[in-house]
Length: 239
Image 1: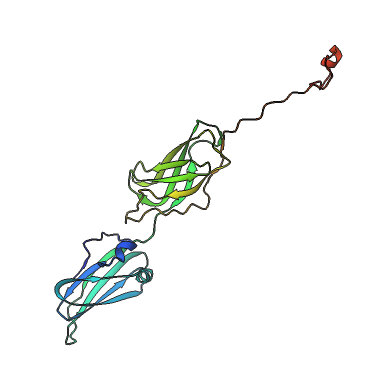
Image 2: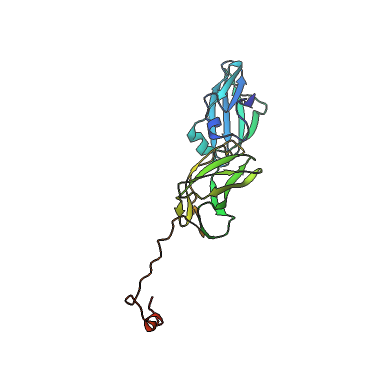
C-alpha cells in the first residue's frame, strides 16, 4: 500500500516533498523490496527502493535533485513489491498522484490608481501589486519605496491583486516613485509557498513623482539706480 504522508497536503511544496519523514509511505511483506516509481511532468522516472517491514509505514524520501527530474505539476506514483524469494506481485501495483508545486509566487508588477503627477507631503497615493499566483484574502506583504517609506499591500479578496496606500512624509522625495525591496509577509500560494522577494523588472510607478522640497526664495533686483525717475520706472525691464 502506498499513501501520502499525513504531514503533507496536496499540492505539495518543495519543503514537504523533501522532509525526512517522507513524501509518502509504503507497506509490504517483511524483507520484501518495494520499487516506488514517481513520474512527473518531465516524463522521467524517479525510482526509490524501499525495504518492506510488515505493517510498519516506510517513508519514501525525495531530495532536491529528484524534484528537478520530476518537474512541476502532477506526479504519478506506483509501488511494485518483490518478495525475499524474488517473486514479483502479479496484480496491479498500488498507486496515487499528487501535484508538485515548488515555485514561489512573486510580484509581477506594480502600478498606481492615483493619477500621474507631482505630489507633496501629506498627500496619499494608492498603489496596486499584482501577483503571479492566487493568494488568500487577508494576506499581505510589505514593500520598501525609494523614498525610504514602507507600504503594506493587502489582498481584500482571494486572487492576485493586493492594494496599499502611501501617505507622503515631510522629507520624502522621488522621481519616479519606485519599489526597492519586498518583504514576503503572510502571502502564500495555494500550495503554501511564500512570496519571493524578487523585485519586478520595472518596479517604478511611472508618472508619479514625490516632491516635498520647498523652492528657494524668489529674488528681485533693481536694474536702475535708486532713487528712480519716472522714465526709468516705466522703461521696459527696469525690474
